[in-house]
Image 1 (cartoon, one colour):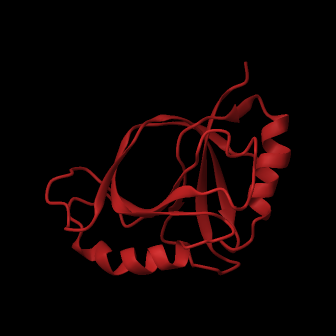
Image 2: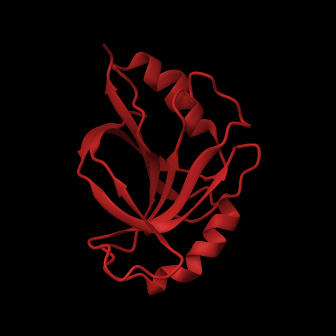
Length: 159
């Protein structure tokens, strides 16, 4: 599976966040809190949902399933005016991304194993220290083997 390489423009996002680790995965609870609030968010640019991770520096170099990171459940907006009470704004900086069109269950980690242990080492890129995210569009179905999503990995050219 070869990704497309894209330059992402900055984005305005609104959502909820929490700290978690892969060993203590709170994704379901986070989306459970955020999902019912999506309809109240003004200035949305699409129906897509975004699942975003902010990893600490060297997260992958010293990988451990107990290392905590910041996880976001969010949507893109074109304005931070009228933010629904209790939700947070997030400005995603632009940059170079490897974008993988993934079809399969969101609970299957094999796509990430492929990206980080096969594709990335053989590519001309390294992971950049910026947020990683998945775009959950109209074909996304949680935990369904026929689900489709885009996986965006921040990259930069190897030196």
